[in-house]
Image 1 (tube, rainbow, N blue to C red):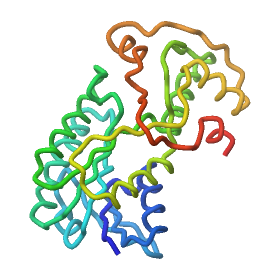
Image 2: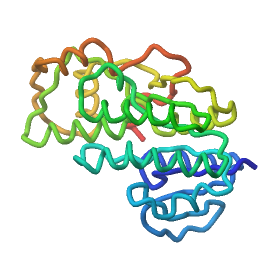
Image 3: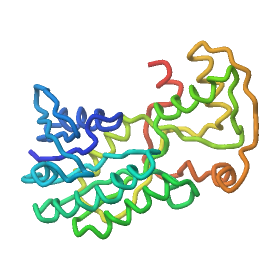
Image 4: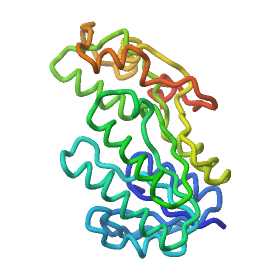
Length: 255
């Protein structure tokens, strides 16, 4: 069995990845900042990427690392996790003789002028220079993140969207399955993009979400200004790459 460490294992994607790998017979070591009691085939370990506590022990003896740990939109802490933490993880992985680091980034990280996307791009650069054979998977927006964003926008009693922005939400279960496939292929030293099975306008996604959740909100269609709006409308959040996921936005909402 291939021994795999999953960082960020308690997160939305991390839980899906741990389930897929354990189901496929991998020996899974799941890392989080706090101790967890869990039975079954998954071994939980404590590893803090910022302080470095437990990182060397977490990577010791594993064949590959699926690096999912992130801290979006948390100021200075974001860079400490995504950049400094990734650098420390790679240093420990290199010293431990790990054969493959698989890093998850975001479609548009190289084209969207947004602070967190720039941090993810710097994380990619750290992985490339880390001295461990690597693969980078850029995913489109997860279904859960899209829903979370729409729910936040709908709190005032109406929903504001730019209907010209294309979106390609992807299910974390599909991303997890693709990551398992990339583990089997081994390090490619390439960046692959992966999106959901359909491209919707943000207006379409919002209307479908409102109906599925039984919410009554007027939808205000407003053009997002500035460079960020232009990047979004240019399609930098979507990809034509194949393969894609299989679970649609409507199916996710129905489940």
